Amino acid sequence: MVKYLLKRLLHGLISVVIVVTIVMILIFSLMKRDLIFRTDMQYRKLQENQKMTYKYEQWERYGYLDYISYGEYLNTLVDGGEITKETRDEAAQLGATVSDDSDVTASYVKKFTETYESRGYEVIRSDRTASGQATILFASRDIPIYTRLVKYFAGIFKIDNIHYVERTTGEKLPDTGITFTFFDPVYNRGEDKVFAPAVMGIGTEHRYLLYFDDQFPYIHQNLLKFNIGTSYSVNKGIAITDTMFAGQDPNLDKTVTFATGLTEESPRNLHTATYVKGSKDATAINAARFDDDYTNVSYFKTNMSRTGFSFVIGIISVIAAYLLGVPLGILMARKKNTFIDGLGTVYVIFIIAVPSLAYIFFFREIGGSLGLPKTFTADMPNLLMYVLPIVSLALPSIASLMKWIRRYMIDQENADYVKFARSGGLSEYEIFTKHILKNAIIPIVHGIPGSILGALVGAIITERLYTVPGAGLLLTEAIQSYDNGVVVGLTLFYAVLSILSLILGDILMAAVDPRISFTEKAR
Image (tube, rainbow, N blue to C red; front, side, top):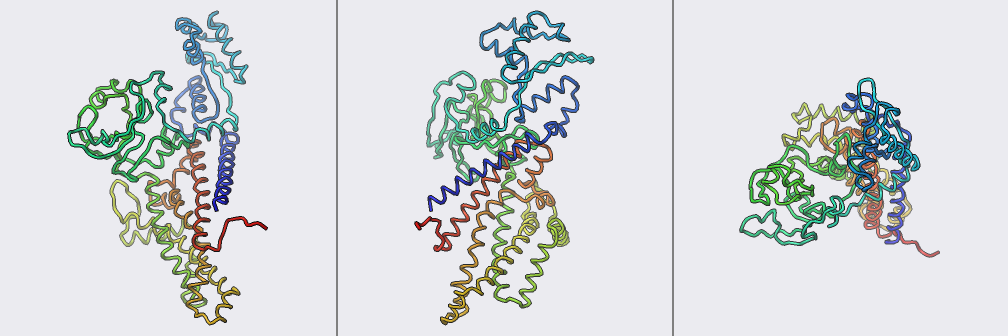
């Protein structure tokens, strides 16, 4: 069994790499990169050279190319001690045209050009425009697919460590290291001690590496992070994992006691503090609250995350589907060719034949006429808001389960072992419970993990029609706004969920029927 699972997992990981590779090729090689500016209002406001600079900077952010400006190049020479700041300032004075460059500028422009052309870059210069925009000079080089893939997968797992601050700022903090405490300072600013274990770091990116709080799942860690990309338009500048799993507005105020002793009603979640050099004294607000530069915190939110809303609706619909679909399918098989079987068949055909968008609208209007909310308002919690989305998601699953359970059971009824059992004197009830149902349920069991994990993905049509702030719309929003990072990240996430679903389905199927073995026997 272990050998089989490892083999299946290896094949799954290979499949994930192949899928992500195909998506990257489609996005970065076959689609026009100018499409990312289709909804960019800032880009439209720029003119000529400003627009060109902005374009290449954005292409670099989106992962299309490496980009370095002439000014950045001169700064690297200063940092390396090759030139002084005065020489840099003189060399940076690009003329209106190449012929207008001073001798110093021309010599460094030549050096810049030769250096980056030898590395495979294309050096581009656009002289001063008629409207007075300054001359620009930069080098760019497209990133090959294989380089992008290696970089992407190499950065998926991000492990926090005590060298983060030193590596990013060049300075080592006093008392750098990791400590464990039974009394989390967030809960122990006063004299009374509250038992709350935590692992804390100095020199790490996050102040808290492991901690407990009252937010599900109650135990949290920042030591290992999954980095599947960053959003550049759907949720600009925010990690995709945070976009999916972090709470949503509005902010939620709690009684917070800061390191300086100040207590106030604030949405700041001190457990999420990350290091920003010089931030403690940067503002009066920070100085009044923090005693070090771990000041960058996220906020408590009132509403669940996108994935949270989708999962709640999805998992309830899955439970409802199995509680109704399986018994009804069994009843149809037991009452084959009767009125009950015919009525169930009509329902199954209706769900299959009518487009999902149409019957969701149909049941939405019926629910609305009965007084149920037809739209989802996250700011005004109401359990009735969940009813229609859950019903809309459960209906097709119920029909599918009814259809397959009926089919599997009728197939089993005609099997030779059932005829043998009847000739052996077993009652129809014993044949049904001990043989037919046990065999017919196996394929259905295999799909349970996929149904549960699929709830994390959300439902595109249902969430759009009921305005559910869930995960179902995230991929479509990313595609519409050409947010490449989100598209690739979600592809990876969905592919991993699919692999897990198949593996867990195999395990569950083997648990239900011990006759199923994944061990290769010697021939």
